[in-house]
Length: 117
Image 1 (cartoon, one colour):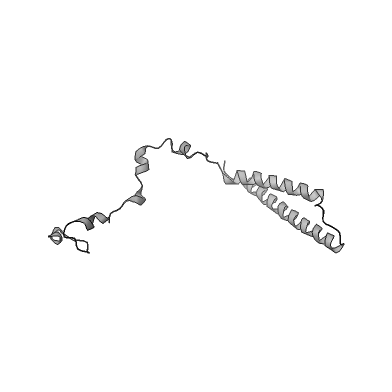
Image 2 (tube, helix red, strand yellow; image 1 turned 120 degrees about the vertical axis):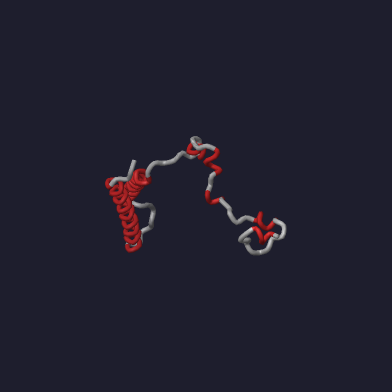
């Protein structure tokens, strides 16, 4: 399922709400310091808003992230043949060490067959 504007908007609202929770918690802490009160716990409305923000963000991330893949790698690789695994262009080597094992090799790459004589 592709990420729609609604899902991105929900995710943005979740992050804004979580930012508001952090700001409210900081304001509550400074209020307690000004009044010289002991900090025991956050008010219930801040805790509830934090939990709701967390769930809204989780919902938004799951929909924006896209389709999840299987945990087992073998599920994705079951339909590929063995030849597909062996055909990896990154492992193609055209300048390999086999040329250094030849008889009469010089440090330069030969341009024609006379260089081997």
